[in-house]
Each structure stands twice: as structure tokens, then as C-alpha cells.
Amino acid sequence: MKPRQGADRGITLLELLITMVLMSLAFAAVLGGMGLFLKAANDQRSMAGLDADIRTYAEALIASPYSDCADAATYESAMQDLADSMDVVATVDVAYWDGNVPAAFGPVCSTDLGVQQLTVSLRAGDGVTTDLVVGKSR
Image (tube, rainbow, N blue to C red):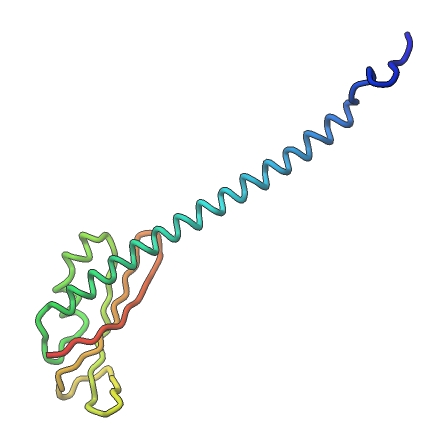
């Protein structure tokens, strides 16, 4: 039997294996990049939805009646139905104006001067959290 000559020679098994390994590595890199892109897009979508939810929650909180020396539980219980409908866990921290200029807020209310600082935190089911600070006045 004569060995093949020139263009009739073909490719060897080793060349075929090297090509398959290189193509597999390229395919794995493309799939990894697509997975990373999809995760980032999902995180962005979740954050955008949570941002809309916190603004809706804060607007409803500001529209609710003002309570002198109200604590966090007062505002959280009043807004519980809205938080449940958004499928988020909401917390509200309340600080009270001390009457000084520039404005300073403290955690204790001895005499309510008519301005409260509310820090709203929403946590979605996937663990993403966002905060917003709003002012509430009489």
C-alpha cells in the first residue's frame, strides 16, 4: 500500500482532536458570557422593579396622615397591605427634628415639632434591598 501524496492526504486524528478541544473551549466561553449577561439583566430588572415599588411606597407613606411622635410600627402597620401587594418586606425608621437649623434629626421624640425623617427600606424576595429617605411634615 502506498502512502497518500499531496492534497489527498486529509487530516490526522490528532488534528481533529485539537480542533474539537479548541471549539469546545470557545463554546464554553460563549455560554459563560451569555449566562453572565442573563444574570446581570435579571438583577437590573429586579432593581428597577424594586425602585418603582419603593417610590410608590414612599408616596403612599407621605400621603398618609401625620402622627405626632409616631414610631416605626405606626407607619409600618398602616402600610402593611401595600407592602403585601408588592410582595416585599418593608421597614420604616423614624427620626424626629430637633428644631435646630441646619436641620438635625434624632431617634427620640420629646416634643414633636412637626417634621419627621422616614427611612424606608424594601427587601424583595430575591434578597435585593433598596432604601429611600423622605421627609414628612404636618
